[in-house]
Length: 114
Image (tube, rainbow, N blue to C red):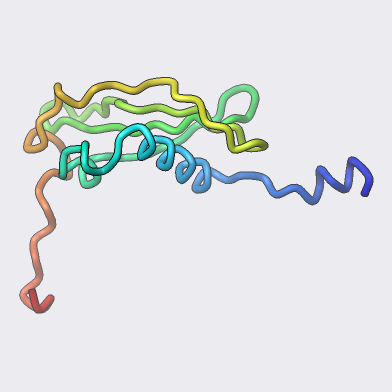
């Protein structure tokens, strides 16, 4: 197979896949049993690309008081190799669940049977 066909046939990573790679990286460093129970409900995940078209995936929390998201984990994901590099790994001790957007679990529906 020629090099140009090989490049054309190579699948490119999309943002959703990059976020999955970053999530796996986070879980390797911070097993679920070591994280606050509210973390999943309060976290937003987003991505951008750098000048080399690598994904920068950010995990953030948004305090109710400011409405400004604060990144606590950021990962660089190479779309060609899948290699991840941690750019930011901030401790969560400064965050209190009740002070964050998304903390309150959704109300249960009377029709949910629960």
